[in-house]
Length: 118
Image (cartoon, rainbow, N blue to C red; front, side, top):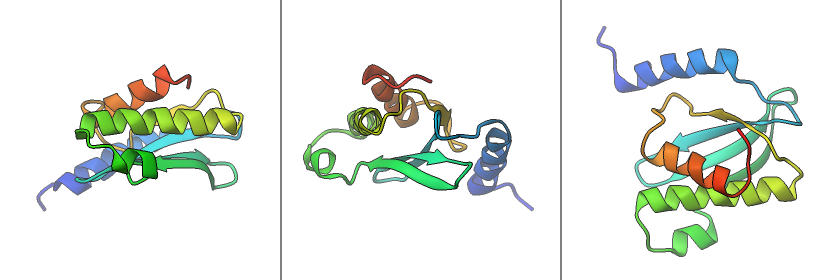
């Protein structure tokens, strides 16, 4: 059986999820990257609930005519602002099987610049 890109990413994802788990004080910041956009959630794994979510389809971000790297940085800043209003200051970063490179790295840098600690 040939190893597809999805299979490889799922294997990496399982390896990461063994180590990274979120709770109410420090939720898991998970990233989903599609061809068109990038989406992020803060998840409390103890209760299994999404606390805060942001994405490139949000109003202020979707209207801006910028490239995908800048769009990812804007999503990172957006999630950090929403997290601070919800009383969350530190998170655990889950890159969800993607390489820490490009849009995923840009999102993380944007979140750090806006005040999230991870």
